[in-house]
Each structure stands twice: as C-alpha cells, then as structure tokens.
Image 1 (cartoon, rainbow, N blue to C red):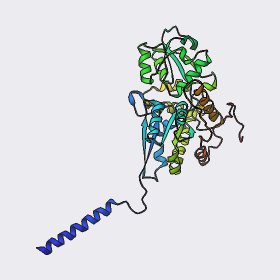
Image 2: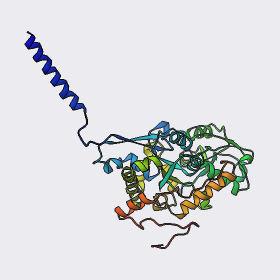
Image 3: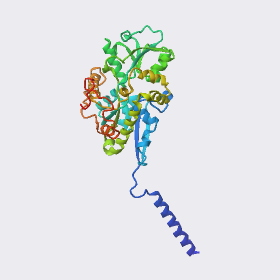
Image 4: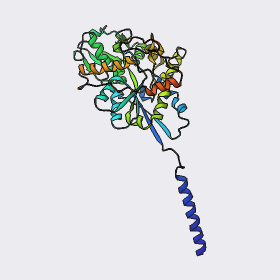
Length: 363
C-alpha cells in the first residue's frame, strides 16, 4: 500500500511539474505589449468610432491588423473621448494613453502643462469650422453675435478657431455669452433654440440638412489661419521604448491616408466615416469644395509647424494659455519619412512653406 501511495505521489509530482512548465512562456517569447490609442472624439450616442480622417479609416478598416501579423504579442486598444482634447490630455497625464489623434489647441495646452510628447504626422488637418444658428434667426453674420448666447467647446481646436474668427470680425470672446458645450449638448440646445448660435464642425451640417439650423459662416475660403489641425501625437517614453511599433502605426496611417486621398474613394470614405452615426451627408458637406489629398495629407510641413507656432502665440494672447509654448523639437518626421519612402509616396502629397505657399518639387 505504501509503495502504491509513493508511486501516486511521484506521478502527481510529475504531472504538476509538466503543468507548471506549460504555464511558462517558451524561451525567447516576447513580452505582451498593449498599445493604447485615443481619439479626441466619439460617435453619435457614444458609438466607438471616429470619422473624417485617415486615422479613423485605420481604426474602422483594421489597418493595424495588416501591419502587425508578425507581432502576436502586441495588442491595440482604441479609446474615444466625449470630452475631446482636454480629456485626452488628462489621459496622457495619467499615463493611460500611448498615442492620440488630437487637435492643435489641446496639444499646445498639454505641452504648456509639461506633457512629454512628439507630433508624428497629420491626420485631420486643414479642417474648417462653421457657425450655425436656428432657422429663422436674426443673426446673419459673425458680427451679429455680440451679446448673444454662443456654444463653443472650450479647450478644443474648435475653441481657438472660433476665437480667431470672432477677432477677425471685430469681436472678442468676452463680447459674446460663451457657453461651454460638447457636440451632443450643442445639437440639443440648437434644436430646442436654447442658444443663439454655435461654432462647430461637420455634425452641424446634419442639423442643417434637417432644416433645424442654418450655417451662416464657414472658414472655407476665408483666412487659412482659421483652419483647425489634428495630428497623431505620442508619448515620448513609448516612442523611445518601441520605435518599431511606432513605425508600424505611422505606416498604417500613411497607407490609409493614401487611400483616403484618392478622389475615386470619396464616397467610400464618407460611408466609412458614417459608422460614427453621423450621416455621410455631413462629411460630404464638410469636404465639399476641397481636394481629398489636401484634407487627408499626412504631411507635417513648414506650414503646419508655423501654424502651431502661431496658434501657441495666439492662445496666450487670447488668454487660453498662461505661459509661452516653444514648438521647436516637438515635431518628429522620421517615422513619416520612412513610411513615405517605403510606400513609394515621397512627393505624392504637396508640401507648403511657412507662408502657406506650395513648395516646388525637390525643395
């Protein structure tokens, strides 16, 4: 009996040892890596989608799956922020994100507050804003906003663009009754006629299509300095620790930017964007009169960098910042340039100088 018990104990010990070996990663196996990517936007009714940019196409069409088949240890998580740029900054500050698609003003505010980041490429740059009023409103132009209740989503790239538009029409922010509202709240307030006007982007076109509002002003065709820019920004620490993964993310967005810049794909691009729950017609309106290869260019050129430099200066002048922000050394084109070369896209998109003029090929 004793011999049998000893035999059973030995068999159990061997079984446990084999099981333990099975739980140990094979020699040389890579440690799991989670990459957290955020969008400073969210779809209608909190749908986990963004639209209107090459990065949104990367998410919706799963481009990163095609870039990472040889990296099974890498898992990508996507996050969408109703609180837009300010919420993204908070997530960066709490080390909850590695990369984000975010607008210029919140990025500048984040840098002013000490966030250690790098801007890697453009996605959603050169975007306009709109001024909408309820149908039948006596407000017919920007200067009519004096003393009126106006929705502006504070801390976002819409905010600075709106302040610049007001300034260009003889008004300052204090000349209107600014109400801080996100997109969903703004749409509800306009529908209920609880506010007199709203500065915003493409969702306003959906309200105009339903005859709820009129869009009485757009920055399209106005001063290019009023444009909004959005870029891919990443934590310096992650980029330094994982340059290979950073390259794959940038390369995926460049591939999507190439597809999204083809006029033959215009309607397909809008349909993909409509997964947000916002109608394709709103994106169609937003991109009307503009070339896709202008709006969907991934290029960080002298015009973008100078725009950020000027935006930082103006943000302080308008009281949105308390300190100077130096943009020198903030932009890192190395990953973008590598992707352009690898994909044969060098000179595919035009580049612009600091004054916004096209550069000659090879300049």
